[in-house]
Length: 451
Image (cartoon, rainbow, N blue to C red; front, side, top):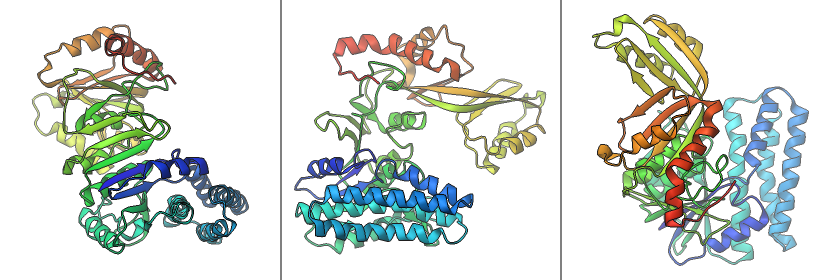
C-alpha cells in the first residue's frame, strides 16, 4: 500500500486533475489524499470572515461565484453532459451547506464546516472523473468517518487505524481509494480540521494507520531545496534527508512540507517522498531514517519572530529559574523557538505574539524584560554530529558581514539556528548560498531551479 497526497495546485484545474489521474495508475493498492483545489480554501476563509462581520449579502455573492466556478470545472472535466449534471448536483450539496450557514450568526464550529467543503468538492469531482470517465474501480473514502482528534486536539491514532481498516474492508477487490486531506472530526464528533497545510499531516497519519510502504507528497516543486528559491536563484533539490533534518527545515520555513507531517511516518519508519506533479520524472526528495555525511545540506528561514530577554541577578546560581520562565509560556500555550542563556539573563524567541502583553506582564515579576520584533531565524541542517567538518566556523565566516542576534548550536545534531533582523534575511541567504553550496553544486553538477 502506498499513500499519495496531492496539493491544491496539483488538482487546481480540470487539466491538472486529468494529469493526476495518469500519475496514480498502478497495480499496487493506493490511497490518494487530495487537498482542496488551489484558491478554494482562501475563498472559503474569506466567506467565513464576511459572515463573522455580518456581511451576509457579500458572503452569499462570493459563495455563488465559487459555485459557478466549480460548475465550469465540472463541465470541463466531465465531457458527458449527464455526468457533468450529476457532478453539479453533488457539488451543490456542499454549497447548500454554506448557503444554509448564512442564515444565522456564524459560530467557530460553523466556520470549520465551511472550510471542510473544499476537500469534499475536490474529491467528489476527481472520483467522478476516475469512475465515470476513465472507468477506474475507485472507492471514495469519507475522511470524516475515520479521521478524528482526541480530547487534547491531537490525532487519535488508534481510532484512525481501526476505522480506516473498516472503510477499506467495505470495498473488497478495490485497489484505488480517494479521500480528503485536512478535514477530520473532533473528539465530540463535530467537523474539525488539522489546520492549514494539514493535508500533508493527513497523508502521514493515513500512511501510518495503513502500514504503508511509502508516503508520497506531490506538489508543484521537485523536492525540498537547499535554499529558498523565492529569494535565491540557482537552488537545487536535496535528494535525501533524514526525518529529523526534514522536520527542522519544515518548521523553520520550508513551505513544501507541513512541520507535523513527518512525525507519524518517522514513528513507523515509513519513507516519505516529495515529488513534483509538473515534473513527475524528477526524483524529488526522499525522507527516511538515513542521515547522510554532508555537514550542511540545506538552509531555511522563518520570519515573524519576536525576541524576549529577561535579565535578573536572581538567576545567578538559582535552580528553578528557567522552569518558572518556561511555565509562563506553557500557560499561554506559546511555543519557544530558540533559547540562549547567560549567568544573569535568558533570551528566547516566539513566533506567536497573540498573548505577548500578558506574557510580558508575568515575566516582569522575574526581572527586567526587553523585546525586539521583525526578526528571522536562519536554520541550517545537516550531519553535525561531533562537528568534525568545521561547518560552524564556515557558517559564521560566511555571515561575517551580517549582524547576528542569537545563535543556537549543539541542542540538535542536525541544526544550527541563527537569529537576525528580517531586513538582513535576503543578504544572509545569498551569502550562505555562495559560501556553502555554490562549490558543491558545481562539483556535483546538480540540477538547478530559479525563482
